[in-house]
Amino acid sequence: MANEATLVIVKPDGLKKSLTGNILTRLAEAKLKIIAAKVIAVDRKLADKHYQHLKNEPFYPELSQYITGELHGENRVMALVYSGEEAITKVRKIAGATNPEEADPVSIRGAYGRILTVGLFENVIHASSDVGEAEREIKLWFEPSDIVCELYPCQKKTFDNFEKTVWK
Ligand code: DAT
Ligand code: MG
Image (cartoon, rainbow, N blue to C red; front, side, top):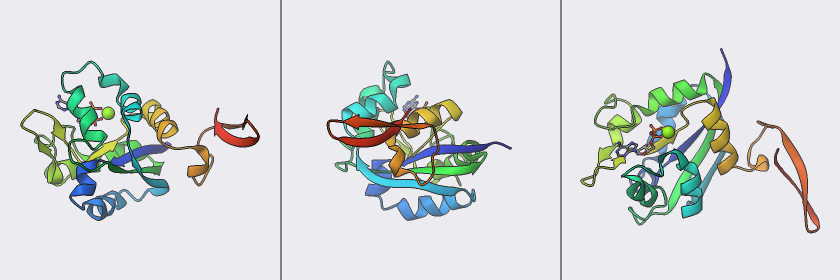
């Protein structure tokens, strides 16, 4: 079995509804290791990069307003990296299907998600879909120093007069 890392984001509705504890408890069932975590405000630039594969979808404007917190008046999200055997599949299973109406009722999205009148799936958490996306997303959301282990190759880079470790 493959050791994998995966990005989880508790979206603004999850924070606004005080679901962080419930969600982390559910994810603990996967018996994975949390190797990074932070609460951040998502700007338009980060949203566009994260959802780059969906930018031409009709629901993209609402999706962008959702992840940046505009929709909920709540611009916090919690981003975490989970690591362990088959982490991607295990987390996707506990998260549930993209459409909360179709998601297993005991999954996170099935239990806490809803479909907005405008049609957007307000599905509480993001979970990486495959190894390539997980790497791209983790490198987008976290710097090497945010993660307790060297997950991907790094390099030292000099900015003006200080040195910093960045993703290679
Ligand atoms: P997932 O988050 O399950 O990987 P995705 O990457 O295809 O799904 O889409 C990202 C988010 O966009 C998803 O969590 C909710 C929203 N979304 C996707 N498809 C949608 C649709 N057909 N209608 C409304 N919102 C959608
Ligand atoms: Mg996806």
